[in-house]
Length: 154
Length: 174
Image (cartoon, rainbow over all chains, first blue to last red; front, side, top):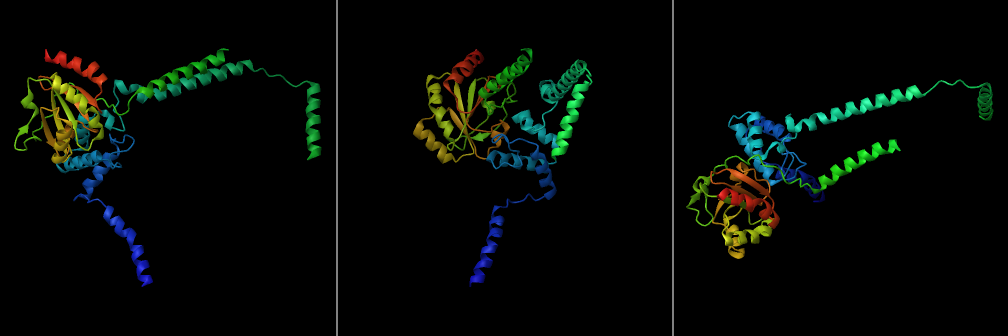
């Protein structure tokens, strides 16, 4: 009896998993394409989640829409166009390069080049100010004494 | 002294950007549909499922298209404003009941009042997707030629109505 109950308890997770699994689309290849596509699209309800990962109702509707459009033979580009026509470039995690996004795309590189230029000129100026100054005889003696002392201690 | 000025300057600029960012609403996504024709639909009326309405029927009129649902709590916030607006007859208001049970929607209108000339029913949210709806309530202002002129996401406020929508309505009605 007890063993039977343990076996039953062990089976529970599987039952739970079976319950949660969503009905797969008929075509696994299509489903793969849908997931790949929706991973690069933003869910507008919970904006930091992708359309693939979101449980929001709208995300589910949109995934279904993408599924149907792919099934109807639309290309990935056509599906993306369909969504950006309605929701704007905001749905794209990878925004298109156009004048309004230039700052976004090239700003970091401009900043990097500027910072490297600044660093270069700083190092150069600093290098000019440093002058080689050999140790005087007295300083050499002090160094020898300090090193010597340390050597004795250890 | 000069060596402190540069970091201070950078700090001030950065703080300025961040401060401005605090006031931006990340939910306010600019709609690509503004200036475009209102997407077509042919949906049943809430008041009479045998009848249908399409945006083409409203050509020549300036109208507000308010997407709402009985399950949407923030729709209740703007309800009084919409009632006020319809009472004064400033602009025609048409509603779309988005992903809802018709019975529940009708119950809301019976209880709180009905600001809409008509409400169309979009049970599966398909028409909503065409309008780029992502969070009800959403309100569109559509002109005489069926062009979307303005969109507001979230509950309407008196400020938005007075500063943005009503002046635009007046302009479009001429």
